[in-house]
Length: 307
Image 1 (cartoon, one colour):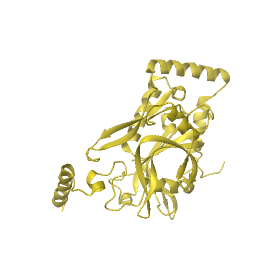
Image 2 (tube, rainbow, N blue to C red):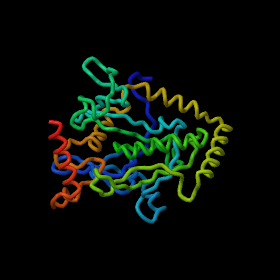
Image 3 (cartoon, rainbow, N blue to C red):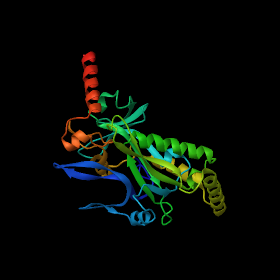
Image 4 (cartoon, one colour):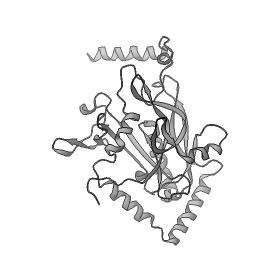
């Protein structure tokens, strides 16, 4: 095994709720209100659609806002990894990754372990270069039982909701998370940061037309069949733990460029927050909303008091 190379779950496709577009010579993320499944192949039109994208859309009458999934691992933290992450925008390489307590940072002296103060308190993270960054691996369909789709996000709402759901489902099922039939669901909410416009985040639920009790029953039956066939789930989780810990950073420079384009774009003062849609004023050229006026005045007042 190559030391320093993190062994991550094999990926056969991507799950996104947006895309990257070119605006004024810059590649910027553009949010959507539905899921899209793509391959890992980039074309002039963007990421090539995965065949399952059309298959899932045929099963719904509207937009694709729910995807049936299972998980590779029983350990919730193996299925979803989330850290504060800072990337070099030029090379796409991860520079600093931390959990709010400790971080691993690439320095001239090599990889150093330092205290992690979170982006709000860390001088190294000033300028919005450090964000929460999560990767969720899920299984979709039955074609490849070890090949996963990866959903990447810098949304606090998605990371917090998915982490909570994964731990809850693992607990109530008796730690057979990998056997539970679940679905990713896109939900909307409004916040002051989004100027009361709708923003979307990803949730994890029992599949439509099912119940938690029936899902647990099905999971226990699948777990029993797997054990009878010699499937060792605990050994798989142990191997995954060892694979992740083999490298200092999960993301390689090969994938880091795409991550930077989508989640760490070079922002200008006029750019809207990545996790929120642009305000009506920003998109239409009309005067700022009353709510935004109040927020800006409050920020100026606080700034004056601090001075």
